[in-house]
Image 1: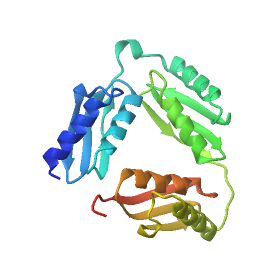
Image 2: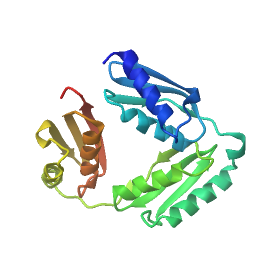
Image 3: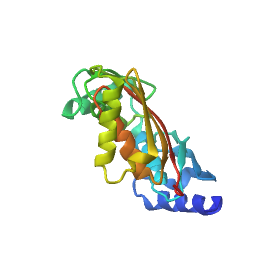
Image 4: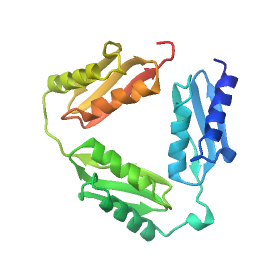
Length: 218
């Protein structure tokens, strides 16, 4: 697929998605790598724009350089944003009470501890949806045990084999001190995300280094 065609397809997907105002978004394409530049009205919209680009066939990487420029009525004091974020976190049953938030110039920093990565991810998602937030810095640490690297690798391999969308033989798994490195090639973002999510779900994983290449010719 040519760079021009891929750029056009991404632009069409951004236009099609009602959660994204594509009027001030520029799309650049270089051999499957897509860069988004311009401005959007919220952090949530920035996140949705990247998701929309990844849905397009032929996109192997998305560099989200969009800036968040809050509209006049959406600007709030940091204290008000922090209060809204804390309330949103408290109301979400998936977010443990041990997670705290601070705000500076609209940028939210999440700190504290969580037993599972899905809880940390939920906190980041919830905070990013709050009006007035321009970005989220997730510094939440995971409080998990220390299984052996072999146990972690075996758990992930089993999860790969259970998932019908994954070709387990096409992916490599390396583990060291709670960090999992995934490498190999997959033929869609659906397969990529399934692999990363499976790795995060394994007991004892504190970090996932994603070196998977999305190759539509794989």
